[in-house]
Amino acid sequence: MTPQPSRWSDLDRPPLRVSPLRSALIWPDGVWTRIDVTESTGSTNADLAAAASAGRARPGTVLIAEEQTRGRGRLGRGWSAPARSGLFFSVLLDPERAGVPAHRLTWLPLLAGVAAATALSRVGGVDTALKWPNDLLVSVGGEERKVGGILAERVVGDDGAVVLGLGLNVSLRADELPVPTAGSLLLANAVTTDRDPLLRAVLRSLADWYRRWVEAAGDPAVSGLDAAYAAGCATLGRTVRAELPGGGELRGEAVALDGDGRLVIEAAGSRQPVAAADIIHLRAT
Figure 1 (cartoon, rainbow, N blue to C red):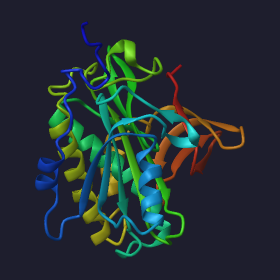
Figure 2: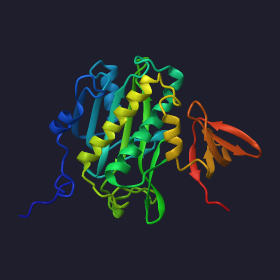
Figure 3: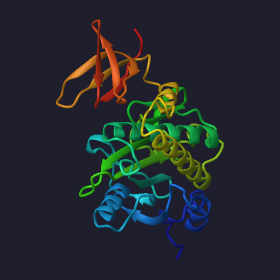
Figure 4: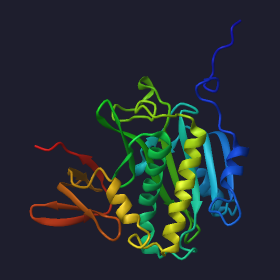
């Protein structure tokens, strides 16, 4: 009898090797202190947050899943993909204990976006843009497609720790996309879909930006974070519709980020900062 293929037997999707990752990314005084890879889990964010709450994980821990079955995006949306088709991981950080004031923590998911976009553009050879607040965009067939997302959550029972989760579609084929607006590095014609160098690049970039931000006490201007985000943001300068929590909406031009990382929308002659919203890029009329 011919053995049936399983979701783990796709030769185009080899497993990550944890030992080389640890050797490459963990060093004295570095940001990353522990790296674990699990075959399958519901949500790396939920697992790492639970471990941190129970005292079983310390800042600098990285948890990677080969398959994530109940990943979560913003507003409770699901995030799932075939096994080994992407990068699904969470990191535990404690910026407040490192000297970052609480009011500047709103910049942390934006920092992760800058770090990921920088790494993917450099190593993947794909222009990667940022859609406020936490989506990563690539071009597939001349259209903007979401290739990744970021979710930051405070750890229950810890006054300062934050779990930062990233999901990146790497080798998804067209028939595997969860929604028509999704994309992948493969479909964007990346120069590589080898997850190992991509993951190393993202984690190194994240560590570099995090260290720079912490050394600046979370100041987005001193660390250069606000300028880097604005330079890579596809939302600024666009006409947008902001779908606000509670059901309202705001239409106008996205003109700036304020000092808290909020999106400033100009509408009807006034400017309004938006702290949380689903942003839809509208075509110019």
